[in-house]
Length: 184
Image (cartoon, rainbow, N blue to C red; front, side, top):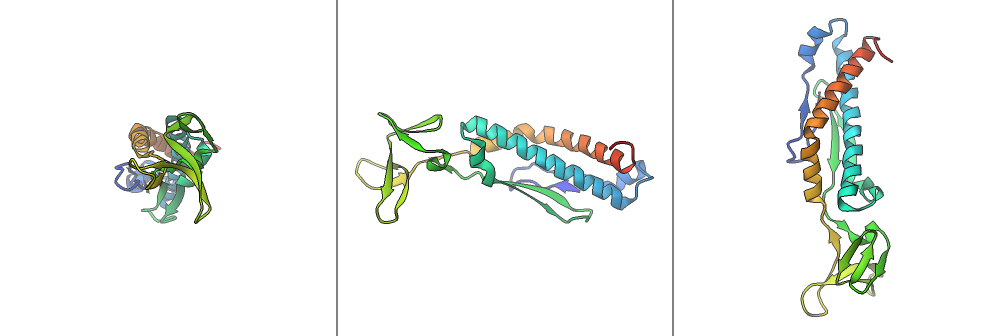
């Protein structure tokens, strides 16, 4: 049973249920695996909530913007090698997705952020509207304004690595007690 890591994140929590079977002899191995799988999923869901909340606070971007950037899944079902997966998209956020832009003397304000030298525009050939900046001294080329979030996301993953392991241990203990009929 394991929580799968994010690609190259190094965040991986693994539990081999075989040694646990000796400690909890009344539990059949399949019930122990189910308990471990539930603990992994609940830990993943807790981690998703914490990361989304703190990433929004760190970047000053509404949580709703990050909703599609967090995906959860499972792999393996009741298989002993089953896992709970949390995927986080860390590509830059397009500024126009943060909220409506307002022109100011310095540039464009979106939510609690101001992008200096930016402007609001509708591209005539595609009718695409957004927040843009000129790259260089001339009129062209122009680029979409984006907000990088990858550094904040990796910092938060490092911060929560130990906490996720502790949370998994607590959830696993609770789920095993539930399987033994000791808690509801």
